[in-house]
Image 1: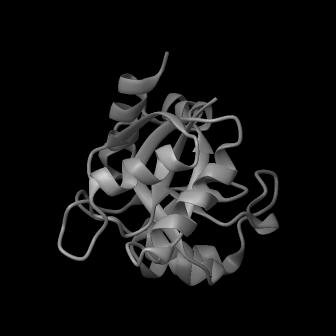
Image 2 (image 1 turned 60 degrees about the vertical axis):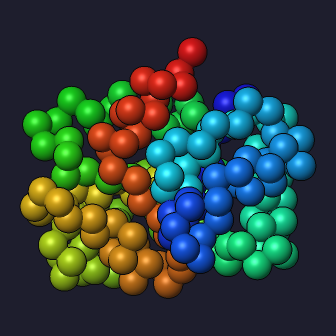
Image 3 (image 1 turned 180 degrees about the vertical axis):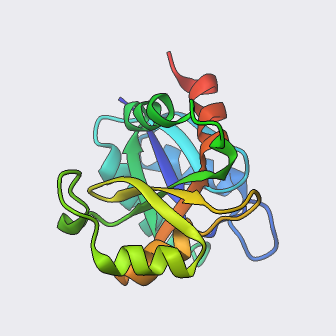
Amino acid sequence: MMSVTFFRNLNQGQPGHLRTADLQHAFAEVGAREVHTFQSNGTVVFEADAPDAVGQDVQGRVAARGLFDDVVFVRALAFVEDIVDSFTQCDDVQRHELTLFAGDGAFEPTAALPVAVTVAATRRRCAVVAHGPGWALIRNDRDGQSNGTPTIEAAVGSRATSRGLPTLLRLVKRFSR
């Protein structure tokens, strides 16, 4: 199964950050197949029988080496494809970003959006336009803004990471079979 890992605050190759070769090596050590880094922002596409375990194992290995100390989220490539298919037809796709975080029942698709999330989004000049367990699609008020991560972190009290919809569109075009 093809999956995507999203590392929070990883700028591969920058001083103090994990190198691409170290990242690829960590995936190979835990048995991931077809490992491909995408851009240099900590987005990695890979194949594995147990993708969540691979993400946790890679995170543990690079943390033990002092190379990375933050969260990693793993999602099926099919999930990313569904988000791209559902939301890249909007006129202002460049203002949208997918924000991932630890699953939370308050973000069930049929549940009303928690007031704390709406307040945090308004304060940060954005809106949550869709959501589900462990994810939210954010629409920023202006081009060039990226408010998804701080909005969701403030609302749920835990770490999050975001990728712009244009980035995800390029990822899907490159890796979908």
